[in-house]
Image 1: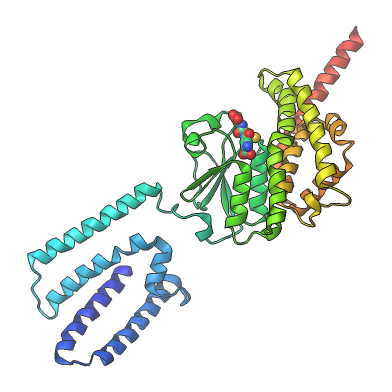
Image 2 (image 1 turned 90 degrees about the vertical axis):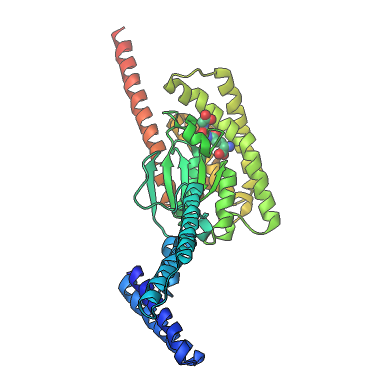
Length: 393
Ligand SMILES: N[C@@H](CCC(=O)N[C@@H](CS)C(=O)NCC(=O)O)C(=O)O
């Protein structure tokens, strides 16, 4: 269809040039040509799109394939001019012109080849903020790309709390993304392929077109800033509020996260994965975790505060910190209650964040809840085995 359009345009241009020699009325000719151009575009649009809403044929092609691919139409048109000039006014096409055309084509294909190699994929060139937003998101595992690929890829494992924060953020804000699972238990985060995305070998990480980023807080800031649809309360433009949130985010990594993650690692994760664990490290981590929970309540959840800093709506800091605390679920009900029981404000803050991000919060934590249920069932059967053994003694 595009070739038909190009042939028609070349043909009319050649005829126009011939007409100009005998009928020197450039403005009239220009008016007729423009009118015919509009009619041709409309016909092309109707055939290609079924509507007249997509702009000119060129605009349509640009949207479909991008500027470099569309420029291929110009040499094709040049060939059209040469062929029709030879047919209608009987012009002679000289060998020099043919060589010139071949050089033109070769140059263009070198550019197309270079562009493809530069980005790795012609669909994946531009960052998120140039892409249309939809509510769709897809899930794949590393190495298995889906049929339709959104521009933003989130690499992570739902067992990881910062990964869950990113996924919830994207879902709530209707950011179109592809979730690529990097299985921590299979050590996929240490693979050379993943290390090209995050040389630190940790999840989460994102690839947005050509742009790569790791560290969950940096990712949340990036998405909140770059995506036009994200409401201000997530990462407020007001510099004073933003600076206070930044302070909480920085504090999080060396306090709450260090306490919670080290405690869970040394009490649940390491033993269940057959890795070495340290009761002393667990004890120190528990102290830091309890101190951190007290600090959050006394510093940032004062009075009836629904969210951190007394804000009426949640921010990226609420989401990040609450996802961190959620890992305590795997400890089991009684252990979790022992730690969170005395912290009523923390418990209602978790509920507030959960409600504000529903149903995505529970959906992202589904795997964690399953791990918890599995662990409790296992502990229950071991306990009943022990009780049976004890009753025989
Ligand atoms: N500060 C990083 C922490 C990332 C992190 O610790 N990720 C963990 C999973 S929650 C991980 O990939 N661990 C694997 C490893 O360190 O080998 C962030 O916020 O993104």
